[in-house]
Image (cartoon, rainbow over all chains, first blue to last red; front, side, top):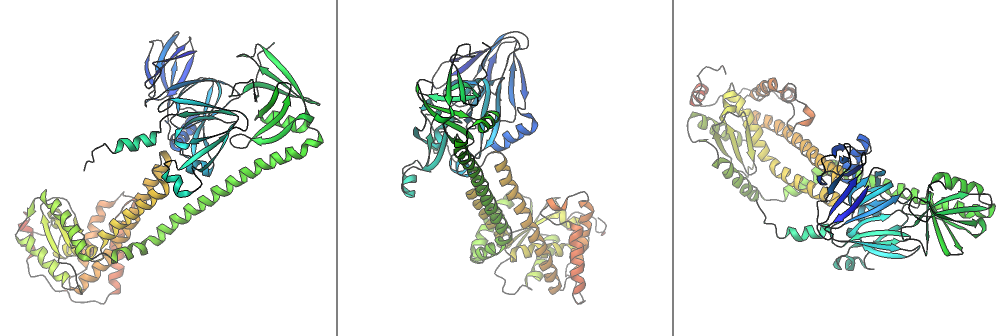
Length: 227
Length: 382
């Protein structure tokens, strides 16, 4: 399985080459085009209950699509819904990532996707909801973001502060606390940041250069109000 | 060498920031860490660490990983263990001087879990309390709010909705049916003490068996309902019911309740995706249903009283509901805003039995003529 990012930037597309018999799972609707040797199946990852909990708890899709090169080698083209970068991570069986609900684009067959409950403060204030995806296993993982992806590398005990709505994914060896952006409550909100996450290494934190919620609010003001 | 199966992640100065996958083996004197230097682990390097050089703590996103730190030949190393077998082996082999820090790390994990449970319990309890409070306490709040709104506001509100509705309908302007409905309304309204409303009744040509009241005294009766009725008392029964919706200001209560409830739920839950959204919608629907049914029962009871005071035979109201009950079969009572018609009829009968008997006074119009005006044969059979 080989992957390549075409047209890097705001409107990228991922090209994945599958050997005969290889398969990849992708977010439903992610497939743009594929070779005629590829079969598209929809699958409830994690069984019916797993799919149900993912749908209801994280708001992710109920079905994932499985793209299988069952009739010979071929390639698939995948793209996310929103404009933004795609990053490729290689999981080796020991590193795990937490991914906010819209961040998953596709993963190799050895990747496991679970929905996991966050603690109360993280769920309530973190901006990703109470349930997020925990991705583990072995293989290739494609994440998508809104805007560009920036990787923050944290050494042990190194700290970094991230606005909660810019998070895409972070390794489970990191830990974070939610705190007010400034020391005062009023200033926290008038500064436009509200709550921020104080991450502590070691590990990786992937952030997106645009805030989907903020963009939505910005677009809303241009939408004519209809009766 | 066989392919390395890493079971831990190690962090250090020369390792990538995402951590170096490694295989940890626990021995009696310490641990051996084998790093997979290239993908697949064909090339590897090992490092042995004595227990005496290692410090332990709990770490990771959920504080559920065992973190070992030491300073080796290549500098500071931080090892994250989450494989339960490896952690168990480490705890068994670790010398006595490490049992205290290990116990502390385990205690830290337990505390974090305990704290999560307590917080979730508290929040769950609070949500339950708010829901119960809303369910049982909201009636009082709504009544308080409604009593502060002047009747003129209500009239304006009702009037605009009324005009809008009638604009698209075929209204019956005059005729015996209109006169009959006016007379019934007059007789009922004259029995209301300090009536702040001027009742305005319109007959609409439609086969729908229905009648409804808007806030401020605007009432619409469909000809379908008058055709279905077998006596003028039955129509008067429905009118008494609708008049009481107006008098008890049910429309306004409903608007306030719905607005208030949706506002509170939206503040508490925001606009959650998935299950949260469904729960929110379900809560609002259930609230509306419960409220609707309480109002219907109230309008039934006060309607019966009004008929009695106006000296109109209340039996009509009961027989009409009984007739509707024949249609009801198979409906689930719990899911309807209106109580089942048969249950309503029974309820009304019981109430009527408590009232002293009185002689009803007939209407001045002739029912066969009214039916004729509706385009039906003058016999009373439907």
